[in-house]
Image (tube, rainbow, N blue to C red):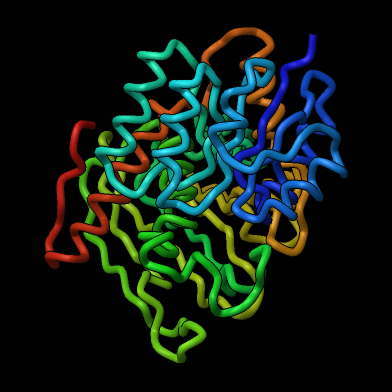
Length: 347
């Protein structure tokens, strides 16, 4: 029997990632669609089959829907996720998990209370080169990791949104709450913890709005750049940079500096992993090219989610596991606000 899926939000991420990947998965059946634009929900229902709903409540009241994807603006993640869990649905929620640490904690608590799965769409750790790099690091190829540099930057969400332009919700402080730090920085924060097996315990950060302007010509109300110095639980230290102002090629690279050599991931256009050992030798791994906004391939998130649901196994990227990255994000925002190093809570 197929797992019946409801879509809450039918914007760009839903149309590019969630819905086509559900449609491609033999265990999934898309059967319900809600969007603030009923017309858009109806278009998706016609394309994939199923029903468009005028309200979230109507969709969640359908007992035939087993699980939902929450693909809406950041400020609605917690409210809709909790509503869905209370309605007895498993929930896959897009990142960032929520806009406050309290909301993130409440989502995890509600999932436990409801006895339902909650997964967060942190897809970086599923990229094939990152999976392979993790194995190489754990096998000791570059020895003990000492420091790192991880970056995620592109030209901004205004060119990629379902309604492109300078009035995208990503730039709206009320709906997005956070900017590049939460949009891109949370990905690389989660990734560096995955690769090193260590958690961020301390952050010194600077978030700023340097260039992005809204439709009114004024600087947007959220950060378009973030630079963080992360100190990790096992003694590693490194930098994480997130930017919406890389107006050339997208940069989604991570470099780890170990006692035996350097590992460069998605940094060389010809090779997805390049290892330079301290004897001068090089090892190249051609796993796959990183996804970009202009080159979308299967993320692996939906397949992992469906595996969790069909086997009744807690998801690998659970809400609880995502808390560590979100705590680092909120601590970094606080660090920037007060101009001081901040300890990451509850690690």
